[in-house]
Length: 387
Ligand SMILES: Cc1cc2nc3c(=O)[nH]c(=O)nc-3n(C[C@H](O)[C@H](O)[C@H](O)COP(=O)(O)O)c2cc1C
Ligand SMILES: O=C(O)C(=O)c1ccccc1
Image (cartoon, rainbow, N blue to C red; front, side, top):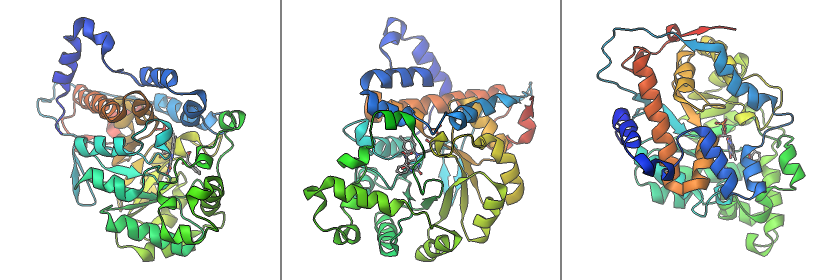
């Protein structure tokens, strides 16, 4: 999809009285509307963070330490936001982050963001804990680029089964998330006694898996809670080490990415263990409280990787300026989390498309007004650190 930022802007300006009826423009508005349409517990699940919320706040605040230093009198008539990732040309440096349990947000569940990303032409990273099984998501996406995120199960046969199913359904990369072998301390969810998996949300891939089902005493629909507890136990893979990553590496020739890296030494370990890409992430502050912001992690990780494999980044991206700063500090692309989750709750597939279109338009205008005509021209010289 081509997005003409000035046309998009002008359409909104000229909508007059209709403007009030249009979908939100800013992240804050999406969040406020999601709060209105959702019950307190599912809203709290998305909004919540670990512990005191320091990591989550820090992710957002880190962007203020860097300021864009524009150049002027550059020809910015033509703009190009496209990047190349594992042989695919992607129109904008944006992916949809893996977010599980989408049926708590919208009846279409993961089918809505999957279709939205297919229309936009950006990769969709499907969560291991999606409510809709991966085969159904693949069917809805045609040939569009999709990656599968894995919470590495303890059981090696289940691991193999998930990877084989993803390969058979046309997913073209595997993302192993390594920051969540235990669920963080999330006070909002504890207060609401709310864990959506226990009522069967987010279990699409497990409950449809022959290896998983054969490990149960009775079919998942006979005892949803028991089956969900078993799935969560598989995910509580507290003995997951680099050796287990090697096992995953051996199972697939697809590009393998590791998600949840914030230390440069771990980035080097990951490279040595054969990954093809690194996702600098702290899970949007939902796992470890008081942790380093991902933007602050980027320069040292970029330094240690030396351009050998792509570095992607998420956690706290809310605006076009954030995207440019992340790219300036070494990211090839960013993943968007909560902004699309809120838009999904408010307006389903249309909402997801809309929130991403606005982000793209803002990024393009920011790029141009800062004196660059292509994402390839964005490097460290775009920003200065001010505090
Ligand atoms: C409701 C919710 C569910 C999530 N589920 C997953 C998941 O299943 N797998 C995963 O790797 N990350 C998951 N994440 C983390 C996101 O992939 C991403 O790292 C994070 O949302 C980025 O931060 P942001 O929300 O500030 O953009 C989830 C995040 C949220 C908000
Ligand atoms: O809600 C999450 O952030 C999430 O991705 C998750 C789900 C299950 C176990 C651990 C993390």
